[in-house]
Length: 105
Image 1 (tube, one colour):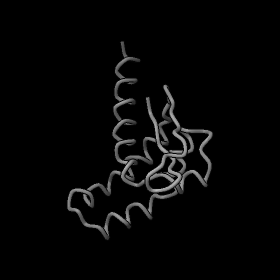
Image 2: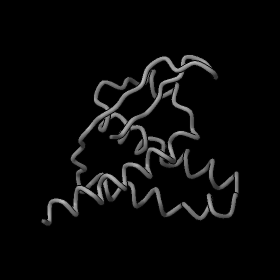
Image 3: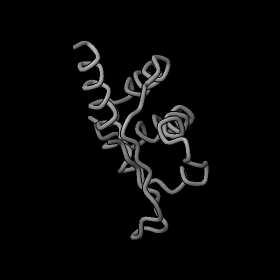
């Protein structure tokens, strides 16, 4: 299951979006790989590079989130905590790997 929280304020969750299944398009995979090219910024803990990575790929990240969660609005995007995006992407890749493995069997 993939999920993302929308926060009302710093301490209170307003709503949570969740999906049990998601068919990832190849074009989306390409976009994710482009984003991941900047992961060195995370490993080096280079804040300026990380901010640049997010800023440069904001549109792709937003499109992906709104594709996975069709009821998500642009206003909801503004209420997602940045620290929750990394676990979301880890879960997304795990989901894709398991789905791909299962489709081969």
